[in-house]
Length: 94
Image 1 (cartoon, rainbow, N blue to C red):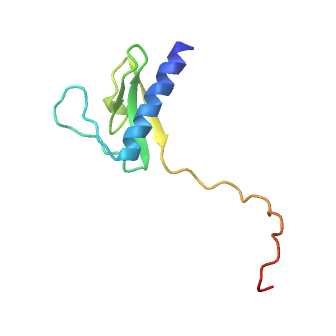
Image 2: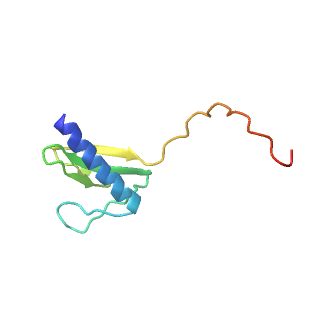
Image 3: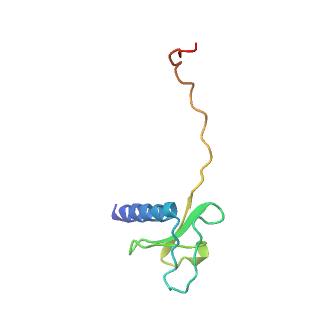
């Protein structure tokens, strides 16, 4: 259960950064940056379940052995059309 809580909190933080247009550098501070969102319109990150750390990356190859790659699509396909709504009242022009 605690692992899911850490993941949920980390995911919320990543989405906050994505919404603000922020960029995060990798942990080694070598000035490499991962674009947010990635070119595939997804937010890519490496999640460390032990520490709860979520590192924004360009791709899965940047994750270490003890990290899980997470890709969050930022553009989802449109859902099905909903049902017709009720008829509204007649307006002043008829």
